[in-house]
Length: 317
Picture 1 (cartoon, rainbow, N blue to C red):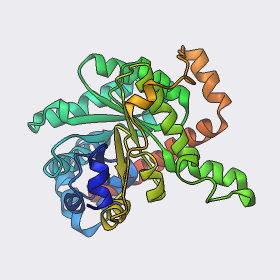
Picture 2 (cartoon, rainbow, N blue to C red; picture 1 turned 180 degrees about the vertical axis):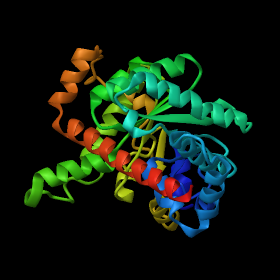
Picture 3 (cartoon, rainbow, N blue to C red; picture 1 turned 120 degrees about the vertical axis):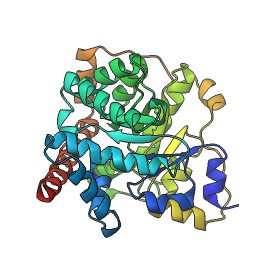
């Protein structure tokens, strides 16, 4: 049995791509998208007609509405391939606007429901800023489930758990990138691999904390740089994986065991419950240089790609 099939025995595998024509071969349950992945997909000749047709069908509408139509069109195609859920992201430029994020999420869900898709099959992706978490809390209370993304710091995970969020996406690879860059020439790749990888340690800590204290929020490790990070998190609720790394897992027959289990987490004695209000959340995030920098950098990068997608659409009108 290959590693991908072994992984599926104890972790829900999610495809991290906008390329719905490629994902079927890996039989993921869910799929995630983001502005960068959609931008990459629409520049592929295979998807040019989809973009062109969607823009033509909504010509004359406000630009943000056309963009959402494109995102949902990709989501609808993905849902023909996966049996579970698709994550569709709210514009990153709204990451500090709670009311606008809520309004955008309702619009996206409305488009899916108008196309006959139950809201249970959609996760609205929102950056895990304080404002984003509050937006997601309100959305969850109205029956719209959310995926809090760009999550790097433990305080973000705790706040999401307290807010009753459906799912979080802690970013393994970007945490690894930051620590590797900080270490410079002193970085020891072998010593910092597997369970010692700083990104793996972060997600493991969040998973153990959630299970120890009965927090229902799902943990989905994201943003992987290598297969070793994935196998070190085997047993995590979900892992969202790029097609390249899915292919590597599928090509390997090496034995794989669960590294994370609820039983081990519940038996842990090194975990203590914490809680955050807005001021303590902002201070804790500020104290975490990696979390602060990677959150800001991630929002900026998604905003840049959202603007590029805007321009592609404007060019087709």
